[in-house]
Length: 80
Image (tube, rainbow, N blue to C red; front, side, top):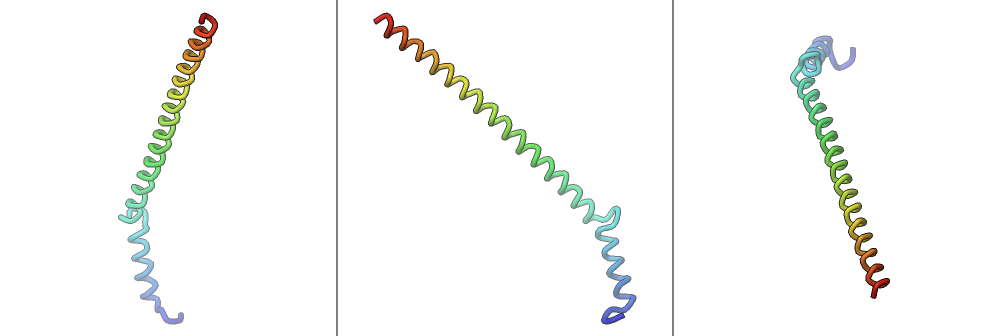
């Protein structure tokens, strides 16, 4: 069997099962990490969408004010 005996392989198998098994601490930790990562991505996406919405609203507001100032200039030129 080469350099490792059956006992070495049994110990390695036990450690792997303990760490990465169904209810091991590492698997729970990785599951919690994955949930946190997904929540982070969702919040970043939501925040980006909010900022884009605010930018659109600001753009519309500035366009509306520019339109009204253009109409005021045209009215003054026509009257004056």
